[in-house]
Image (cartoon, rainbow, N blue to C red; front, side, top):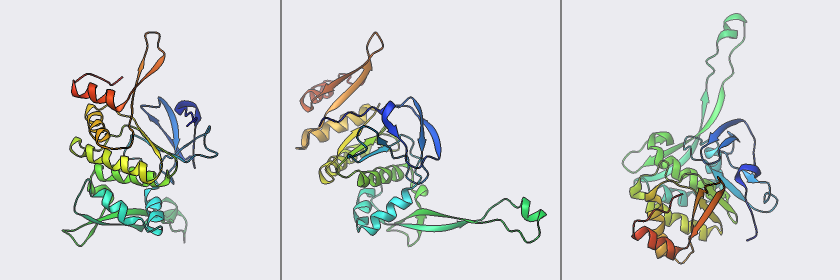
Length: 253
């Protein structure tokens, strides 16, 4: 309580290497290849753990390193269980280092004895029960990558705050209620607050279904603009939200 986060002004970067624009943030932000666009608001960075997950599910730089850390902590079985929300046959996940040979042969063609340097990269492989082989994470579909992205950042946000932009991205509506159940459980287990933005009516309805059945409190905040252009927020308690959802009224800003 008593913390205030200003997304537009107070995001600072970790290991900045690149930039992109987030639709919800309305400005360019810097991202890191090593830590998958995780940011700390300046106003709470000294004493509050805060992780931000962008809406773009392809910004997965650093997930392999995060997964390796979880494996060392003995928490890998929890990650596998979470991935089974999307693909029930997933039975194992691992990291693997590969060597990438340089394609630039210009200097080697002109300088005797020169050979292009190779680079190493750590990737994530997934195994399913029906096949003895491991397959690259990206071959398992966007949903598996999105769930893993959320799970790994949630693990890093223990006793803090997890920010998820456009939760619905990569997640089929049929599994969104299970995802919300998992997020409510994570918030309780890791002692953290979760803020998730969405434009999806399905996400809101599934959030309401889970919130009504859980002891933990959930709240929906609708953001919009007044006639003067000022940003205004309208909070809905679980009771209010249930009335709006069941009667088909619009709560999105």
